[in-house]
Amino acid sequence: MPETLQSLEQARNTAIDLAVKFGPKMLAALLILTLGFFVGRWVSQWLMRALAHIEIEPPARLLIVRVARGLVTVLFLIMALQNLGVELLPLIAGLGVAGAGVALAMQGVLGNLFAGMTIIFTKPFRVGEYIEIVGEEGVVNSISLFQTTLTHADRSQIVIPNRKIVGEILHNYGNIRQVNVVVGVAYDTDIKRAFALIHETLQSHPNVLREAELEPRVFVSQFAESSVSIAVRPWVAVENFGSVPGEISQAILEKFRSAGVAIPLPQREVRMVAAA
Image (cartoon, rainbow, N blue to C red; front, side, top):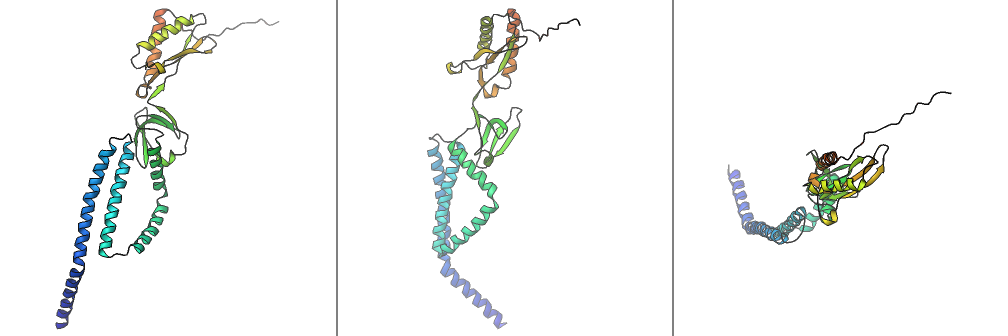
């Protein structure tokens, strides 16, 4: 029994000695970490307000804010560890070895991360633009550090890892696209009159863009077997690209019928030659 009491007394004395020796340092380290938390939050809020006045993509803005807050947190963590008397060089070496192992195990994730940073800062496309890449196409819905999401014409979502995008051939249509409608008229049709009727139809369509640099193109594209093919290529917004071609085709058909412009059916001339 006396030995047990002696052990408890020794443990109590040891705990008191440790508390006296390391207690102030632990308290100071906790205060440093708490101060670092508030300083990091203040820095991130200030940086977010400052970057709001600069033309920069939202993912890039968020990345800069997070990196800045992370650096502030790491700085105060190092100060807290130094206050506790921790040797940082062995710790850094151990973290380096562990980091190398993690990097090898997460090559795909890190590849997406660096590719996402490349996309965010080089800006080959932006949210709201229509792009075609790696066999997929759609409107860019979001750009994150790891993946890019497209919205297809059928309203489905296409999620592409960023490492699949960087280094590939990218077709960026931007916010507008050019519709391609082909109309056939008879060979004896007054082409200038047909052009005038088509231009009237395009002028009256609400979704056809009318800026000077986006003037619709109307021209003869081909001499077919039964008709003269006229190409009609107006510009429309990306969101209207799916519906406008059918609407224009119907409007031109109604315009031609009301004006008496013939749209011929395919014809074949068959000659019967008597055997000798």
